[in-house]
Image 1: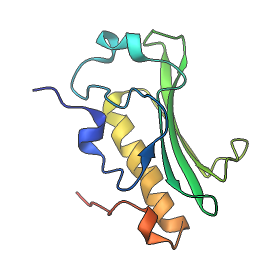
Image 2: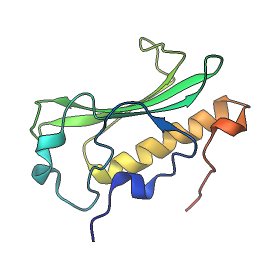
Image 3: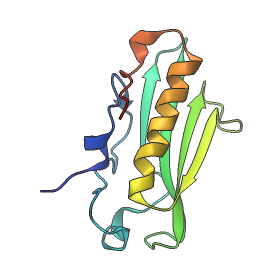
Image 4: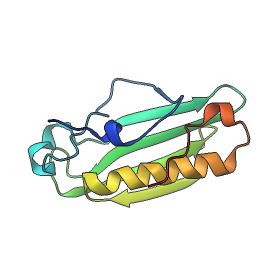
Length: 122
C-alpha cells in the first residue's frame, strides 16, 4: 500500500496553492523518487489578506539527485527574507516532523484558530 507525506500530516484548512508534489511517498526510498526532487515542491497557505502564512517545502542541492536536503519554511505575510521558522532535513521520514513543527509554530503564533489544523499528539 502506497502512503504519502500528506497521509501523515493534517494540514487542516490549509490550501495547496500550486500543483505540487505533496504526494511524496513515505516508505519509498528517496533515490527512487529523484524525478520529483526540486526547489518548488509544494506550498500550503493559511489565512487571508489580514493573516497570511505559508508552509513551503522544497529540495535544495543537486536537482533530481539525492545529494541535497529538504527545506521547510513557515513564512508570514510573504516575508521570505525572514522566515518564522526554517528546518532542513535529508529524509522523507524527517520531513513529516519538520512540517508538524511548522504547524505547531503556526498555532503558537496566531490566535485565529479558524485557520489552524487540529493539534495531534502522538
